[in-house]
Image (cartoon, rainbow, N blue to C red; front, top):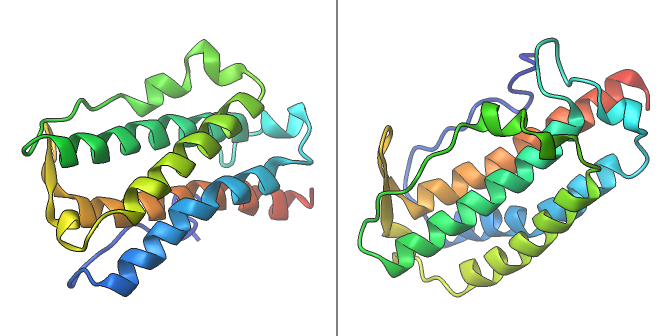
Length: 172
């Protein structure tokens, strides 16, 4: 198994349908409780353990999930309120090394819970056609919200697996 991608890399081919969208929305909804459960008994020393050699610590992973969730939620809101907006990318690696990534994880768990509650409510109001709306990433080009939804669901599960795989492998 590639430790960088414990659940594999994101792939989506085919057509968006109501069932798939509902599955991804459900994954967005439940991620906060899964992340909280995964880290609830970890010590500071365990949280400061990288999930792989050269990788982020579990603490950085939790803070990254909060950063990514905030940015993703905003991208959805921009795409439904503006016509094909150009979004602002961010350097995830640099963000993960800022001082706020050394804080206790509770601050980011609260952000994840709050953002996902709002995001879930927003997504439930979308029609299947709304997922055809898009934004433009300066480096990646146009991104339809339906595909981005799938990526976001995968992304949360991907980082959750970084945490749960290390916890399992270490016997914590």
